[in-house]
Length: 419
Image (cartoon, rainbow, N blue to C red):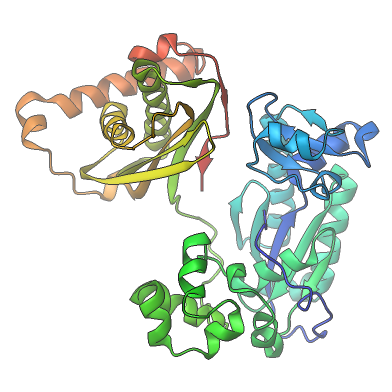
């Protein structure tokens, strides 16, 4: 889902030389909203917003709704103020997953080198498919036609010699288009972009670079790397300087390591009661830990996100002494992090818990703490939570809850984050 800033100058014909351009980035357009419109043709041409009603957030918006300023992650109340005529549709994650799996199957029928990066986008290396199907532009044309014929939704495709440029090209091809950036034009293409278009340049990095007078990729490329490093740090600065020059040697990988697992919850009513907030944190920690165990991973870091009633968002993180997949341990850190946030007397609208710094459990050297070694606490908790996992597999996710989860307040839940 390409949401980075775009450049009008970049949206032009960069030539048709395809040699060395075997990387495709396929991005489904306004995916959730497009699936809903395909299922209900009477919504075609209307402003469609997918998400929770009331105090929920926007998960996706049709291009008609985006014209009014509606964006994903926006509070639904604000979205409806911007676009009061919008049709709000509750999400159907099973339907989106089914379409996603079908589209990914189409990509894998072209090449086994497919790296899915989210439910609605993937990279493909089609170098081995040229002789069988044709040049990358023909492969892109066929894929787009097949997706539309099968599911009545559209996708955009970027074609380039690197993953960096292919993704940026698909962003500029949207909606329902293809953009080819030949090898010889990659640097020229990059130089037309704002610096925020590069992966890894979020709001804070963009502000840090702007303080040094760097607001475009061209300025970033022309600046001495030591200046960039002074602005954003030695490692990140060197990486961004490489990207500005089009240096991205990453290959398409058929398996992709999860970087974080998280969940968050927007409350039906703002919460002040520490007990109720604690119950919500335990529920979220339980979900994160269950996903960690499902994927055979341990988390080295726990982070939390809180949003107050005035929409101020604060994040905090802490590295664990020992990597863990135990909900009780994730919850303990999350609770302390939230307790340490100065809320200014305001109630909470949202809390989130995320497990980061993931490592495979089979490869992790886990040294128990003194407390765990003397009491068997961690192992005992993990065995208990694994038993809960088994009950849920057999009888459903709501069959059993941990501690305070059993009586948590009514809430609106956003999708689990697995990125």
